[in-house]
Image (tube, rainbow, N blue to C red; front, side):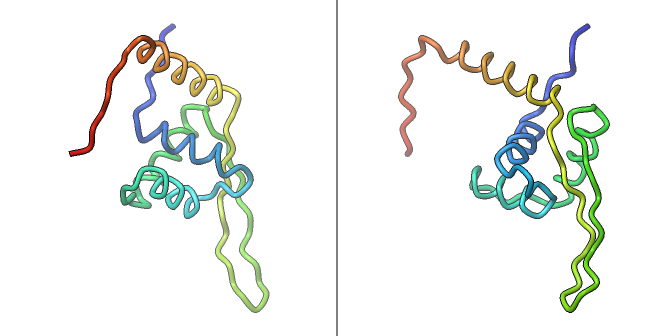
Length: 110
């Protein structure tokens, strides 16, 4: 059975979660993708991708309640990669590495 391919943005979301570890909730995920890609990311796009990846069984999440002290914090949903996501990322990286092997290409900035 063939698996549905991950899109570029889904890759970015999964890699951001992997990089952030236990700090993987929506705002840091957006900031990590923006920092690594140099592109502005719409938070709504991240929310949609997170839901889609969770439905695909690639993420698990847990909701933490907001604090009730002096500084009120909102509840946060933290995300964690499942084993299937790690496998997909490894497979994808290996496929791209095989495609790049043997190619001597200089990319010059204009």
